[in-house]
Image (cartoon, rainbow, N blue to C red; front, top):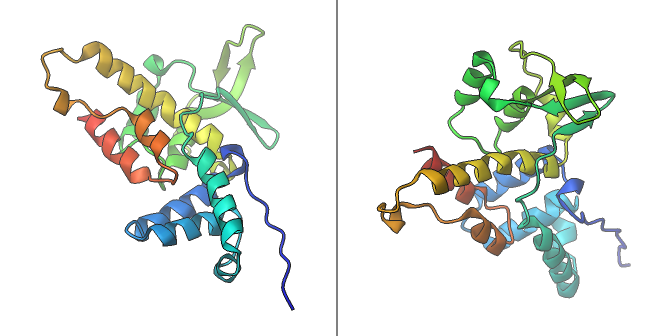
Length: 218
């Protein structure tokens, strides 16, 4: 007798938590030379399908699910969300990066890269802190940084928030490059634009982003 299963597929990064993303990224890194395995991991982590269930899917169903997932997975250049509510607490993004305290700056820069990896929830815990005051004109203050990092709560926050924060910095760095690099620098030394690369990628190929971020740091 055939087994009937119900498959729930996410429609956007808003439906995927950081915890899911990190687990997917780890498996894809371990099998980065195996495209078929990577596709299977996408369905495994994002649709909660077991290996057995994936293997039993009709080929047309498998293709439709894969195409739907890859349709939004390349769209990671999302807007920064300055406010986010976790439980009963509303958090605000650091309102003035130029006036960030030395302690917060030092704790962020101790990580080798500014990218979504195992250290990312710690960075989010530094950048987003509980709102203390908020005015109608959207100006606000957040709790002073005290060196205490509570990263676990960020694992359940959706990826649209995380990508919005990451690409705030990516786009900031790209803008800085555009304004500060001399026109005499050889084009080969300028990193390839991130948007076209990510737009062509139907999978979570975070290693591409990592390498670009390393170039930007230098």
